[in-house]
Amino acid sequence: MKITTWNVNSLTARLQHVLDWTAANPVDVLCLQELKLTDDKFPLDVLRAAGYEHCAVFGQKTYNGVAVMSRHPLKDVVRNITGFEDEHSRLLSVTVDAPAGAMRVVNGYFVNGQEPGSEKFAYKMKWLDGLREHVRAEMAQHERLVLLGDFNVAPEDRDSFDPEGLRETIHHTTEERTHFRELLSLGLVDSFRMFEQPEKSFSWWDYRMLGYQKNRGLRIDHILVSEALKPLVKACAVDRTPRKWKQPSDHAPVTVEF
DNA sequence: ATGTCACTGTAGCAGTGA
View 1 (cartoon, rainbow, N blue to C red):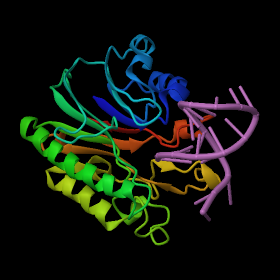
View 2: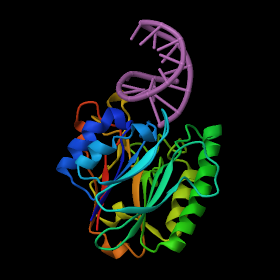
View 3: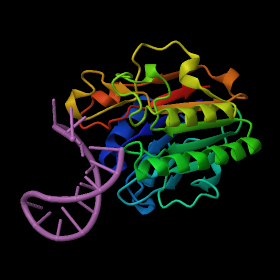
View 4: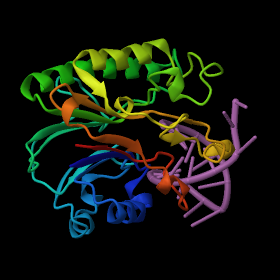
């Protein structure tokens, strides 16, 4: 059983990459962020033909948008953070009816926050407050839970190409890192860190300044698993392959295997 | 502060968000 998170930076622009990547990596569940399209534009038929019979979509014009594509049935779909008014489409919670047992999957496109002190940063903090309570409630209902997506947080210094130079800048602030640790405190584990990983493992590289070529990246895409799932995790890895393709997303897919 | 990319509205480029 494999579950992947991938910020595709426009599904319209990246559909062929998604098809090519899933053809080579037929994961059970692919969680997408930054669709940048409305629900009616979601290529259901094409993805169904690719084996993803079950899709939950929460789109938005131009910005944001998340989806879960699955080879197994989905149920109990919840859009956004319960009790948190939000104009953005950023969170999708679903239950995957996998053969080895159901799993709750919470797929998020976390707020970027632009710059500490900005209005957008304040929104990020509020959103993260809401998310924590949403996940707490979800976990009370679902012992087997996965929280994944584009967190827009580099949790530790080793998750950044320049932790000193970027100290307390966006993705690196103490407040953001505290929020990340609070999520872990709910009883979640960063599956990527359960395993030995190459040094300077990142999931995102700026399009500018030859970011990828110089490996000037951040690890901001994460897969957290609940304690009940932790003993079942076999692997977690970033796949940099599609970042090398023509006109790539700035993010690489991250996959957990159970 | 950003040399890139995707998108929108209104046009063949400027503004926004990342």
